[in-house]
Image 1: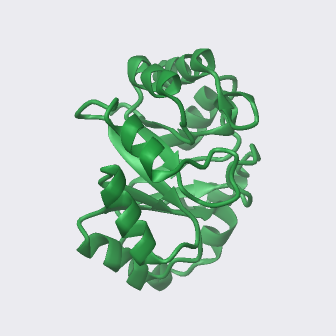
Image 2 (image 1 turned 90 degrees about the vertical axis):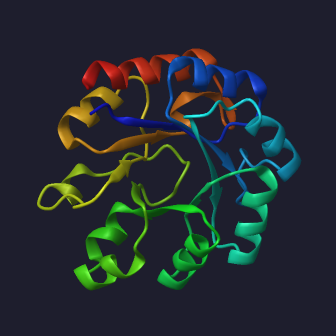
Length: 206
């Protein structure tokens, strides 16, 4: 199977178009406060209209009330949410009840510290393993996954770039990869060329 690819933190028509043209499987719009990639609902909704059927549009949230998450996702026309905060299994269940697909994002360190019961309680659709500070370009320590990789679908994030993603895919064999800062020309500004090179690098490793 081909590695699932998400280009996250998009905020302009040009970069959404670049991700779609390159063959990304998903695009991400950040609604978490404090990020240089944060967009409002109106912007996300307009960008969502450029995303064709078959490409997943994901809203990224961090520690926001689930009522806000659900309302924002609906207003922007999204069917998937990525939860980056301290959301509980009940929060995941609430998103599911609203008809949303859930990506649970945690640091690899936090996931390694969870026991099997805690992991099973979340019932997320996909697990995303990140570095400690999401979006900061930090690389995930592969040693944290050397003994036990996630049993279900999981996405690798954290410090990925066109230069290192192929090696990371070959080493860890994740279900998917997620990139944001690694395809930027400056903080918060995506590079269409880097997006294309990233997708090509992943496909070379498949």
